[in-house]
Length: 199
Image (cartoon, rainbow, N blue to C red):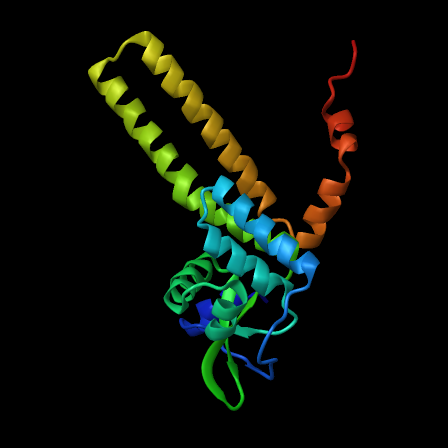
């Protein structure tokens, strides 16, 4: 059962009771990964700080408080709060309660396959779904008002592509992380299976 399943059942964030380290010192490798993840985030249209906090929580063996995150990354405490809320909305970070500490701590989903599935799902919902809806609206208006043939063809091609890609994604997302890993490991074998048989 995933976090989101527990949240769905209780209709509120799922809190766990965990003991935790009070500070985190990054190794050179960890610093390199955090900085790189921040750079990659900006290329994907994600705020640099949001991406760096995600990387930090992924690498941390224990949940971290907002104060520790701010100190480790040398960023404002308010910036941490805003960024963590963004990550929570994506479903890849959750708050946890620590015995003897009233401050909220945070931990990141560690299963890589599930983490990326959630990220892709959120990007689809925020970016692809509105595009598909717009294309549907454009098609309906063109059908009703009789737009030029060239525009109708281009809109139809775009709409068909996005709808086909979305349908394929909907099939893949039903797979378990283990099954998806197995599919990805097939690599060139998938291409061979799909290659047309010579007549």
